[in-house]
Image (cartoon, rainbow, N blue to C red):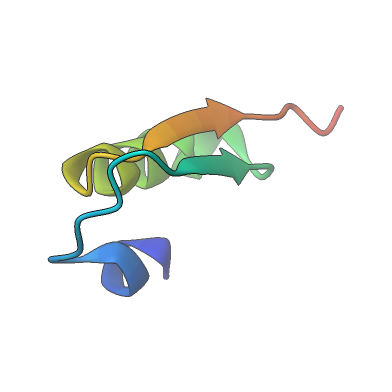
Length: 45
């Protein structure tokens, strides 16, 4: 879902925090980094 939300956007300077499964972490990271935002992962365990 986040991939579609940030696709084609320039989010440079923003920080995106993601708390979810390890399985989707890399997909979310890739989408966020394409938008030039900083990605942060929060382990919910």
